[in-house]
Structures are given as C-alpha cells and as structure tokens.
Image (cartoon, rainbow, N blue to C red):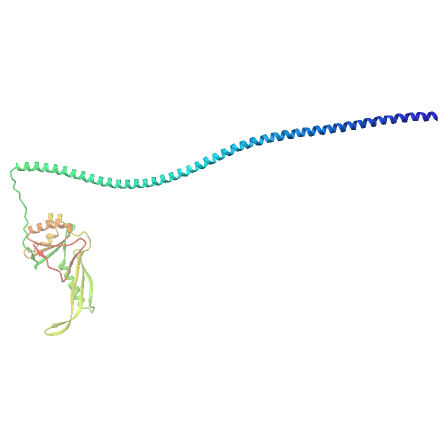
Length: 346
C-alpha cells in the first residue's frame, strides 16, 4: 500500500507541474497580447493622426484653390453679365433703330405709292394727249392729201371747157288751205297706204245716230272698222242741253266728237315707194278719175320716210296734184278732232 501511495504522489506532482507550466504560458501570452494591443493602439492612433493631418493639409490646399478658381469664375461671371447687359442694351438700341427704319420705310412706301398713282395719271394724260396729237397729225396729213387732190382737180377743171348742167326744179307755189276733195295717205317705213278717213267718218256718224236714240249720256269710247286695213278709235260726248229755237227754249241732245285716232290693224302696211313709182299701184287706182284741180293729197309722213315723200311729191306734181304734208313723230298715230286744222297743200 505504501508503494501504491508513492506512485500516486508522483503522478499528482507531475500533473500539477504541467498545469503550472501551462498557466505560466497562458499568462505570458496574455501579457504579450496586452503589450501588442497597447502598441497597436498607439500605432493606430499615430497613423490616424498622420492621416487626419494629411487630410487637413490636403483639405486646406483644395479650399484655397477652389476659392481662387471661384474668384476667377466670379470675375468671369461678372464680366459676362456686364457683356450680356451691354449686348441687351445694344439689342434694344438696334430694335429701336429697326422700328424707326420700318416706320420710315412705311412712309417712303406710301410716298412711292402716291408718286406711282400720280405718274400713272400723268401717263394716261400724256397718252391721251399723244393720241390726240397723232389724230390731229393724221387729219392734217389727210387734209393735205385732200387739198392736193382738190388742187389737181381744180387745175384739171380749169383746163376743161365749161359744161352745161341741167337742174331739175320742182316749183313750190304758195300754200293754200284745202277745201275741195281731199285724199289721205300714210307714209311710214317708205310704205304708202291709203287712209280711208271719209269712210271711217261715215261709220262714226252712223254710231252717232244709234247713240242719239239711246238714253245714256256722257263720254263714250268706241271703234269702227276695219276699212281698207284701218280702224278708227274715237271718243264722243252726249249731253242734254237747253237751246233756243225760234225764240223758244227747249231741251235738245248734243252729240260731239271729242277725239279720234286712226291706225292700221298690222304693220308694216302699204306698198313701197319703188312699187308706187314703177308700176300700177293703189295710188293709181285711187287717183283714177279724180280732177287734179279740185283734189288735194294729204300725206301723213314719218321721219323715216322724208326722202320717200320727196320722190312721191315729185311724182304727184308731175301728174298735176297738189300735196299737203302732215309730219308725225315716230310712235304717234293719225289723230283728229273738232279742234284740228285743215291741210295746206302746195
């Protein structure tokens, strides 16, 4: 047992020594760790200080550069602003000049338009004057040619023997009022037609007789015909009046013709002057058997047939008949009435 106890004591001592060694090593390691940690902290702080110093140094240098650059930019900005204001002022000045120039241009355009209008009017006047001058020159030249032609004709005639010229002469006796047999003709459009005045008046008289038997008084309009292509439209007045007969007053009926218009049924009416003068015509039939000494021909003539009336008058004069002219304006028909005048024949 004693041996066993000794072995056990030896083992315990060996185990404790090992634990002491391990404990010492751990302690050493802890000390080393603490020492290294302290040194590392110092190194880190020193490095941080250096970094902060470097950063502060760099930051301080960058700020000065930036301030300098900022000052440069500020100066440039101020210069640019001044240039901008100067340019804006120039622009305003140029705008004002442009506006004034535009106003001056508008005024000049107005003056130009007025000048062009005045020139156009003057040019038209000059053109008219030029045309008139040209026409006068042409007339003058034509007159000169005509004068030269007449001078040549005069010279030629002066060298010719004087001719004998026969002139037809239509005597014009003193006009006299017609009281004998009177025949009426109508000459319009150079067409001659017989106007049956006496036959139409006979028809009107028969109307008077029928009207006298009636009881109606006052003005009446009526028409008679046609007779030889003519109708007569007339107005008559019927009234009851007090008259003196044999020294006694009594009532009587008075019928009076107040107006009459004679017109053809259709136009044109009658034969042409050439037919009248060149062949047998209604004129020859109407004048057959009439005595020229007691018969007067009244011609109601329109302005478009004055030349034809001249020929007709010469024709009738050659046959011994006196002619009375009754001119009528265009558009007016033959009229008659109680206030009318009798024809005057030549």
